[in-house]
Image 1 (cartoon, rainbow, N blue to C red):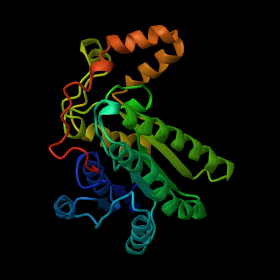
Image 2: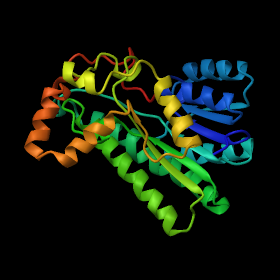
Image 3: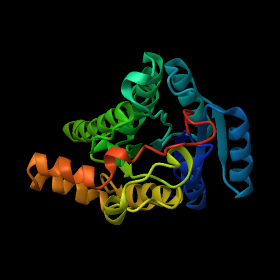
Image 4: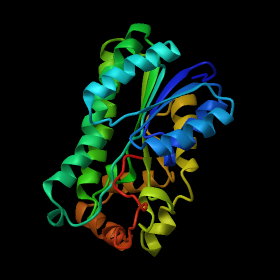
Length: 280
């Protein structure tokens, strides 16, 4: 996709992966609408993006509020003319043993990471189908392909995001809407932000190194998913190795390998952001 002149909506776009992605889109000549749940952070992001010379719009949005999503989707279409690109980036992370947190914590993770995508996709997909043009990018995770203790519900939602993305791609094909593209992004642990402190063991870090910053993921979104139309970019690329080993190895061997890689203890020192558990 040639991005110049395209119009994009980025959820959870005021910090982290979302903000860096919005910056890259502005540099490519896109008009960008940024949604985020945190007003003060959103205001700072708007100022930063506009200073780059971008055509930028912002709105405070809790993506789990479907009425607000549908309202702001109409506003985005009015302000930008149409929406060519949707980046579903907003996410909620809460680590810990499954039994040690109340239902409300896990319900929020599911609402932000999965249910909200049904609202945003429904809001923008009809227009893309009508034009037979557009691209929806859903941020999944490396944990969307492998179980991670102390991250069980988050991992479950990210498995679901991958399945949702692939299923929707085939629905578009069944409608002969081949101009509407779908990508899921699968980053491993990032040294900063929501997953600060999380880390694989020695062997795991050799095979799947810690990502240095959010721009590694933003680059995958813009350069690989949008511009090259790749289906499911992984970062680091060796995340693909884990998926392939699952197919080749006997299951009991694969489970032992995951343990040797330190996946089963990778959340032990997780601290996240100071305000972890936010949509970011």
